[in-house]
Amino acid sequence: MATTAAPTTTNTGFAMRLLGAAALDPTTYEEIEADRGATGQALLVVVLSSLAAGIGARGLGSGSLTSVVFLSGIALISWAAWALVTFEIGARIMPTPETRVDIGELLRTIGFAATPGMLQIFGVVPGAAVPAFVITWIWMLAAMVVAVRQALDFTSTARAIGVCVLGWVLALGIAITLGLFFGPTVS
Image 1 (cartoon, rainbow, N blue to C red):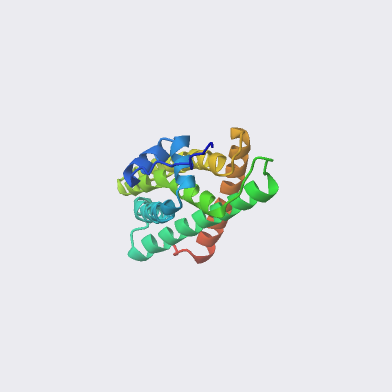
Image 2 (image 1 turned 120 degrees about the horizontal axis):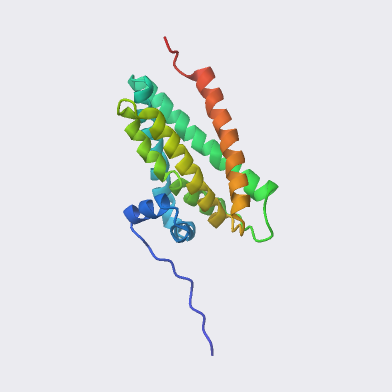
């Protein structure tokens, strides 16, 4: 009588998952995708990345606590919008026959794709805000591509890039709109 072993996942520690996610390691994203226990970790990554954005924005002249809280909130809402738009595009508009959609798996992987965003905190260093934000945004986009490819079971990186870039543009538009309408005034 043949038996089949249950699929196993390695339970890498949180710090190693952060490093693997930042290094764009597909194996790390596969592990995160399979580990339902990583949901809280993914949420923590998104919150820390959003706080880093709010704090790092102080280097752009947004020094008040109200601005930090507001910009952290905008970063969090932008991530949520990006996640939702990415899910809709990847699952409903551009799926492949291999695409298996599980919102939890997608949220975990793209949560960890926000890992490079924690480096936005270096925006507080005088003169470093713009480079810190541009570099981390590009890095997060690259991480999102890997996360989406793994979570949506895409065989094509080009498809994952299309889904992520389109989602990113739409989420960026939402963030800019929210910032213009509800953001603190600059005097």
